[in-house]
Image 1 (tube, rainbow over the protein chains, first blue to last red):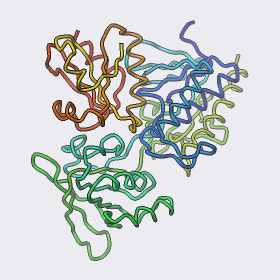
Image 2: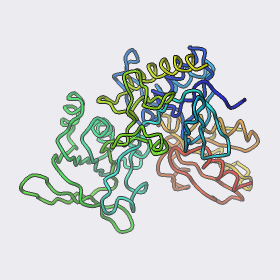
Image 3: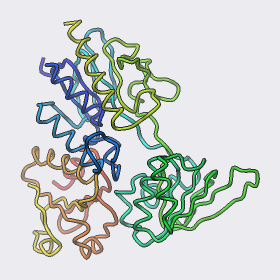
Image 4: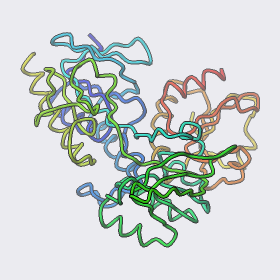
Length: 308
Length: 102
C-alpha cells in the first residue's frame, strides 16, 4: 500500500528531524509530517549559542540545516495536521485534517513539541496579534523606537528582551518570579540602560481603546502594589504547553499534557514513541530534543524489525 | 513562479492579475520557514505569481500597503487587496487564500 510506512514522525522540530535522520539511516520507510513548517519553536529563536559545534546562529538557520539534512537523505515530508492516531494493532492509522489521506505506520514517533502558554487575563484576546505578540523576531520591527513590555523571566523572555531592548526606546519586564534565565543573559539584560524589571508581579489586565496602551499588574509581595505601565506593544513569554490534544485518546498523556515516555522514548502503547519537548522532561533544549529523537528512532526501528 | 521584486518594480506589475505579495526580512526565522511552504505551493501551482519583497529595503511600499511586520502575505486581485495573512501560516490557509482569487 502506497500510504504505509515503517515509521511516521509527527512534528518536524529538532526531535522529529533527528528521528527522521536516524530512522532513514536504519533503512526504514519514513514519513515526516508537520502542520506548519520544519523547525518548530526554534524558528522563533533569535540566536542559538548552545548547540554543540554550531557556534552562534539563528534558530531558523539551524532549522534549515537540519531540514536540508533530512532532504539530502531522502526523508519524505508533507505539510499535514495530524488529528487522530488509532492504535489498530500492528498498523497504526494516522488521520490528517487537510484531506481524506490516511497513513498507516508500524511505528509512530510523536514530536509535536509545544505551543506558547497564555495568561488568560482581560484584554489578552482583544489585543492578541494586534498589540500582543509571542514572537519578537516576527513582530519586533514594528516597535522600533517605541515602548514595549515583556511578560516573563525565563530563557525565551530574557533572550528576546535583549533583542527588543536594542530596537525599542524603553523595555519593561514584568515577571511572576525573578529572572530565571541563563545567568550570563540575565546579566547582559540588567546592564541595558533602557530596561526596567519588575519581579514578583501578577499581570491583571491589558488596556486600550482603539489600540493597546498599557499593562496593569500587581506585586505578589505583601505590599501588593498595583502599577500601570504604558506601552505600544507586549510580548508574552510565560512558558509553553504540550501540543498533544490529538493524542489524548491513546492514554499516554499526563495531567500536564505531556507524553510519558521511558528512557527508550517508548510510551505505554507498543509502537508509539515520544520525543522532544512534548515529553515529560526536565530540560527542554534543542540538543535534548535531538537526543530524544535519535533514541526514539532507534527504539522505533527495533520495534518495527521485531514485528515484521 | 516566485520572483523577488523591489518597490520600483512593484509599480510595473500587472495589477489586474491575481497575485500573492509576501513581505519578508532576511533576519526573520519564520520568513525563512515560510519560504519552504511557498516553494511547495509553487510546485503545485507553478503558474500562480508569487512576489517576495524585502521589508527592510522597501519601506515606502510597506508603508503604502500598511504592512507592519513580517512575514506578511497580501493577496491581490483586480488591483485590490482581497485578504492578508500575517505570520507563518499553514499551507492550507495560504492555498485557500490563493484559490479565493482564482
